[in-house]
Length: 133
Ligand code: ZN
Image (cartoon, rainbow, N blue to C red):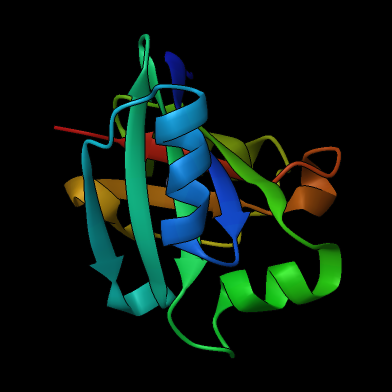
């Protein structure tokens, strides 16, 4: 079902500050930033090989990333797997007994169609299914 790791999502408190580490220390390039209103996040993409690092800063103290950081601190927040057809993947996951956070696709940064599986069904890892056309 999954083709590759589309990106790794990392929750950060301060995007500008964090970018200094990724750009100046690790020498990665910033491909772009985007605000995703629906999820109350500002996202920065840094391509690496065939995948990307996605840095996520909350734009609202009640947003999901702000709540995540409050509970667990900064760090790896989700792993996104590329799928060809996210609706089909959701259906297959459900048929196999996996609890989905999203039962239908929602908008993801960069125009992706995404859906999250519940970490209770995936050994504690927040998994994003990600379709790009
Ligand atoms: Zn993501």
